[in-house]
Length: 189
Length: 415
Image 1 (cartoon, rainbow over the protein chains, first blue to last red):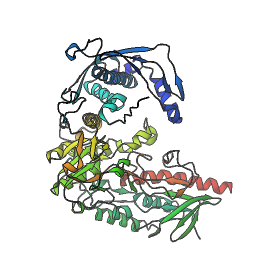
Image 2 (image 1 turned 90 degrees about the vertical axis):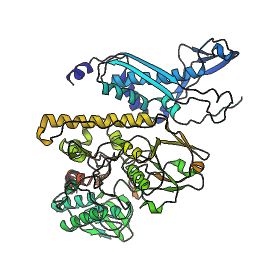
Image 3 (image 1 turned 120 degrees about the vertical axis):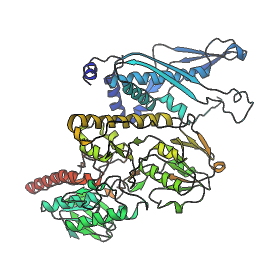
Image 4 (image 1 turned 135 degrees about the vertical axis):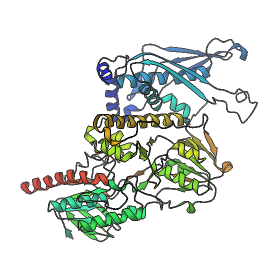
């Protein structure tokens, strides 16, 4: 406990917890500002190769631009008769989950005064292709089970690290997306 | 019109404890009770329910359990007798069968309308409890036909339920107890478990409530907690007051062949959809339980090495299937009944005083509201972790009666 107390004052995981807690208080007072919209725009390139660009989002009551536009490609491997220009959308979905949990682990660790030294997450999702290929109607298209393994080196006990990872899941947007149903509305403009 | 200094609404443990405190202070008051003393315990509980707290913990100001079984758990007739006895012991001025229709502020303080007349008073103590309405999620409105919805307020015993499989939604004390009892009646049961608070019934030779009481956890004050709103939302401990003192956790249900699935997350046609986060809610509960046991062990080491002869130990991790079902077709699986053990909320619809926030939640500081002279009691973590327990009524009544007395004195000086 003494060690945790000593390290608490100088924990630096690169997360500004004071700012996050301030934002939490501010958004609690003005719930309209807490309504966000995240966006991505995807363009077909060729074959199964696509390119998404990401810039603006809506939040704090107004459109938010940012200085950089990010680009993420997706494609499929050669065994799918594709050119393997980029990761598959399934791998990007797993990446979204991993990144979301990772950000959560860092933030919760900072809040709890736990110094992180290294954190690795390995994600694996089971998929039965009989689903997307239409071979068996009883097989779903999406992942069967997704397994995430965290390897955390931090100034904390095993139980504290387990609690970090558990709390990160509890507060993760993408973990929620993958574990609970979401309404998805697709239109043609 | 009746005139009195203070009206206490509700004659359960909280209202009676406040009455005792006001009598001590010579503040004239009346308790308005829609039924008889201990009305909720009489009329809104299932047949087999016993208190989650041991008998020795049934303590009220100037009164306590004195029977032969301090470690047992009262059934409902015993609770009713206990509170009736307290009402007589303190000679509480209870107006029974008097249902409050509205409370409004006026120049003199408050005007309380009931079906048996009007009371004008300078202060009001609301002691109507935290469990007036059973929460039922909105998706219950869209259930396919052929499935009965039952709330714990309606449930009495398994004999009421249709034959067939039963889904119990909610893994706190109520849901766990009802799932076990319905399974024992011979029905197939599925438990949909969201976030829950796992605790063992006994640890190192003592009741978990004894440890929590001894370590001071139940006395923790609302102004000593980091995030009181979160603390007030924590679900009830996963406990049952069984005579055999058995622990009632998800492992115990699984051993009875109750299928455990995640939180009920949605409904798609006739399909019930469950969250895939079951593993995490169980991990969170196991971690939290172990932190509680660590606290107890540390307290023993530091303060009371003689309090137990047993060395520390830990309970088995919650075991769940590696791939719990995410969807259940209600018709194909023969689900005939859903029991909504999804919590309770108080009913303050009769209170026409602006003490609610934009979401209709009561705003109060340890039971003291922004409306001068209006107080609340008996809500979760109102002033202490034990505020909603019988054992918590006394300390809160003392604090709030002090506040109420100063309020009346200030008013008298001002007038």
